[in-house]
Image (cartoon, rainbow, N blue to C red; front, top):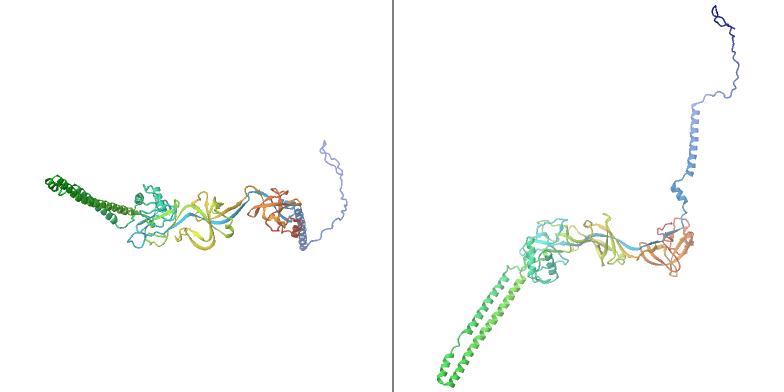
Length: 555
């Protein structure tokens, strides 16, 4: 033990401190884990591969379990639905049933005319186009000059009757009346002329019209007026002859009777009786000579008057047939205006040989061809829907006409100007019965030439009716027609009377106590997608369904 230092009076005191010695105790540690042996690299890699494999197996199991437990809404709805039926069914509808015929057609003008002028100018050579004031696409109004051929105009006027002859003064007929109406619409009245008679008023109106377009009309008689001048000279001569005859007659009446005085004197010297006798004889002699001269003078006057009347009649006739004429080659009559210029194959200076221009006029119509099996379903007056798939425009229309004989497909509005008066050439394509459809309202002119779809309403029920697919109706051996109504797991037959058919559906009317209502399910056929479905259907379909798959679906 050491003594620590302390503090005392004489200095630090020493305090004894005990000394403790620590002796480490012996501790025994049990050997729980032996020291690891050194691990090689190959063993370490094998352990990693085993761990990855075990993890993959665990994740796969988790995924399979999740797939069985988790389902999409579509899968859940599919599994919740009923199993597929062994029969095809369709719902009974209540609506207006229409039987329709669908064909293709072409929108074209009601009238297409090929202009092929023929010159009427005497002494002119081969006709040549001398002026061409219109171009393709121009709109043409009544009275407009289309072209000039060898210096003569070719113009258009309103009218339905095609021109087929030259119209000259004195002519009569419907074509003359058409000309008179066309001139009147242009402001040139025909005066007192009767309708259909080419008289003085019509001549004046025609002359005024030609002047309004800047031309002189051609004379009906190309003799330079010689016939009228000759007739006028004949009238003048007859008038003078009559004047001479009248003067001679008057002179004969006023002349004294020769020998009457001498006979009177002789009679006076011879006695009263002789005088009386002489006087009577003198009177008789004088009277006989005056009567002969007067008769001749009267006869000459009468004949002169007859000659004058005949000369005046001839003059009237000459004047009636002279004046302006309307050559057939100078006018084109169109049904409606404004018209359109479809093609102009001719050029200024080119010779005229055939059509030189194509015009279309009137409201657009649609022309189509019906096949043999369609013709019996379509007749004039039926409703039609015109649809242009290009523009999406639809318009109501009606069938205007259906031809009774088959014809060749035609291409309207040929750009080369060839073709007949309907503007088409036989294309050697499809044959059928020509049908014309006239819209109830004018179509947009932009539809001209477009291919459109025509839906023709061949038949329709009078109102809403019960409608089922045609395959739902069965005919039994006894002649009864029935449908089989499906209600859950039960089926019942209902006798029905079929009516209007159209587009694969038929109108039905229940007969007797049976009942069919809108929304009921009726059997239409067999589901071919089920194995053995045919046997099931044959056993379960007492209604004798025909087994045709019409595309009906289970509800």
